[in-house]
Image: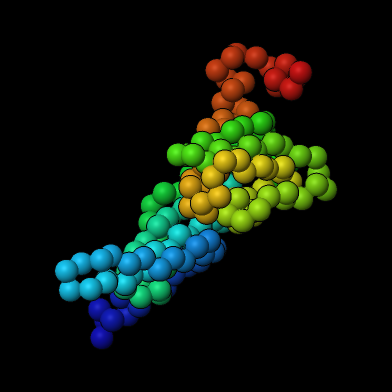
Length: 176
């Protein structure tokens, strides 16, 4: 009886810790593998998780059923969470994210602009907590590669405080 109570309390704590991240599926694909006996059907899912406070991650999962693929993708996304510097609800400076053939241009925007993005880029920005940004997806139209390019662009951003410390300059000089 006592061990069940401990297990229940641990599950509640885990659930409380996990609930801070929101999940959103960005793509579900049907994948077939041709083998000697016929075709093996599986599903591939890509999921973005974020807390809308500067943390976001992306993951991919494959399984014979859609819910299992999504569950695996969420677990993978939680392992790949990155911290994004958010300054006045936007990114601190211009950045280009690259992955494979995909290129994503990320530009900071003034307050009131909103999230000018499409597809998976919009989902990532919203779950990262960025409310004002201009983006442009170039070359590839593949949802997952565009999402990975976006994550790489956000990963390349440095916090303005880190830049200031590296250059040994004051806060006023940083913004000139």
